[in-house]
Image (cartoon, rainbow over all chains, first blue to last red; front, side, top):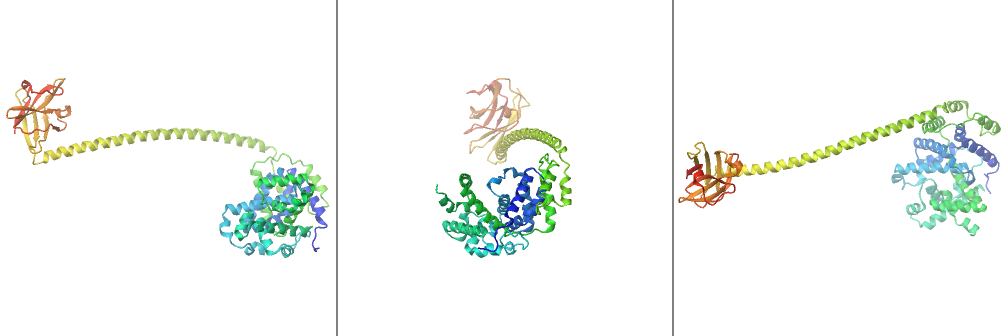
Length: 188
Length: 298
C-alpha cells in the first residue's frame, strides 16, 4: 500500500526497548544515556512543536527525563510501549508548561500551521521504520490534520477544539477518529 | 458487549489522543484487559499516533546532549534518591547481551565517567538522616519562634487597645474641660455680667470670693479665691439677698470651694447682695447666719 512500512526493525527495536526497560527498572543510570540517544529527537521534536521555543523545549525535555526516571516504577509494559508512555509524559509536561505560562491566551487564535516548529522538516536521518511527515500529511486531509494537531500538540479538549473551529462537537469527534484511522492504516 | 462496535466507536482513538476523562480511561483499560482484540486495536491506535509524533522528530543540537544528561543527573541526585542498586555485575551483563545491538551500545566513555562518579551508596543515607534531623530542628525552632512572636503580638495588641481607650477617654475629658473653660471665659469677658466681691466676715477675715451675676439671664457664677476648708459633713452654700430676704443659690462643689474652678449656681431673679454660709451637706432652706463666711453687695 505504501512504500514505507514497518517491516524490518520492529522486532529489533522492541528488543532494544525491552532491554532499556529492564535497565531502567534496575535503576541503571547509564540507561538514560541510551534513552537520550534513542528518543531525544522524537521527544524534542514534539516538545518543540508544543512549546515553540528551543530553550524551553530543552528544559522540558530534561524535566521530563527526571520525571520518567522517578515515576518509572509506574510504567506498565503490558499496557503499551515505552515510547508511548514517555511521549505522553513529555506531551503532558509541555502542555502544562504552555498552559501555566498562559501562552494560550496569545497563541490560541494563531493557526497552528503558521508556527515555526511545523515548518521544520522531519529529520532525513530518522529511523527508516517511520513514515515521514510529508507522507502522513498527504494522507490526512487538512481538516483532519488540524484537529489531530490541536488535540495532540495543543492540549485542547475536543470541546475546546469545537469552540475554536466553530464546529459541532460531533464533527470534531468524527474527524479525530477518522484521522487516526488513516494514520493507523499507514503503519499497518 | 459487541467488541467490534466498541472498537468502531472511536473511543480508543480518543484514549490515545489523551482526551478522555480519568474514569473513561480506566474503563477503556478494563475493557482492553478483558478483550485481547481491543487491546490489540488500542496498541495499533497508539502506535499510529506514536508514528505521527515521531514524524515530527527534530534532532536536538549536539551540545544539548551533554547539558540535558548532566542536568538530569544533578536533578535526580538532588532529589535525594538512593542509588543503592547499581550492582557492578548487572551493567556488564547488560552490555554483553546487547553487544550486537547497535542502538544499545553502552554509553560513550565520558558519559560513563560521569555516571560512575556517583560516590553515593554510603554517604547518602547518613547525609539524609542528618538533613532530616536538621529539618526537624529547624521546624521546631521556627515553631518556637512563631509562638514567641505570636504571644508578643497578642501582648502588643492588648497594650495598644488599652492605650487607645485611655487616649480617647483623655481626649473626651479634655474636650469637656475645654468647653467648661470656654464657658467660664465667656462669663468673665461678658459685659452683661456684673461681678460682686464677697469679703470675709470677722469670722474669716482672709476669705474672699467673687460672684458674677447677669440680671438679664439671671445666671449666677461663683469664683472662690480663698475659703477655709469646711468641717467634715459641711458644705458652703450661696445665698442671694433680695430686699434683705435670703434666697438659696445652691451649694458649692468641693472643687469650687477649693478655688479650682468657677461654678454656675442657681438662677437668681433679683438680688442686691450675696453671702455664703456653712451648712450641712446638700444645703438647707434657710441660712444659719452664725456661719456666714463672706458677704458682698452689688
